[in-house]
Length: 87
Image 1 (tube, one colour):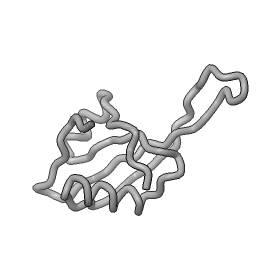
Image 2 (cartoon, one colour; image 1 turned 90 degrees about the vertical axis):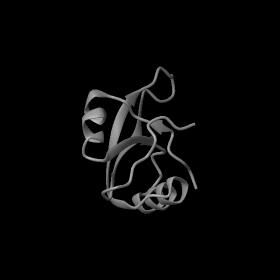
Image 3 (tube, rainbow, N blue to C red; image 1 turned 135 degrees about the vertical axis):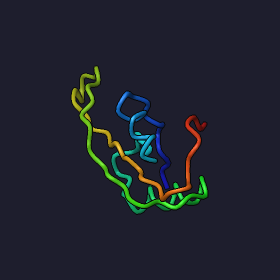
Image 4 (cartoon, one colour; image 1 turned 30 degrees about the horizontal axis):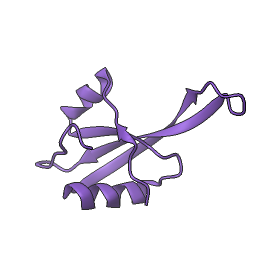
């Protein structure tokens, strides 16, 4: 199973932390159920819901100028949290 690429740190994602929501860049082929099981196993938390969206990124590559990646916002149940920076 693919793991998230990294945690996304923006102004919006920091505001979402107050609502117990965490934002990750993930592989574009990763599904919500795979992400939910991975987060619950690795961090020992309970996921309440996941929102996902595809984000267009611009690469300077002759073969593929526009590619897509996926962003997932994970909402945890109350009294659970994930450390902000994880390797």
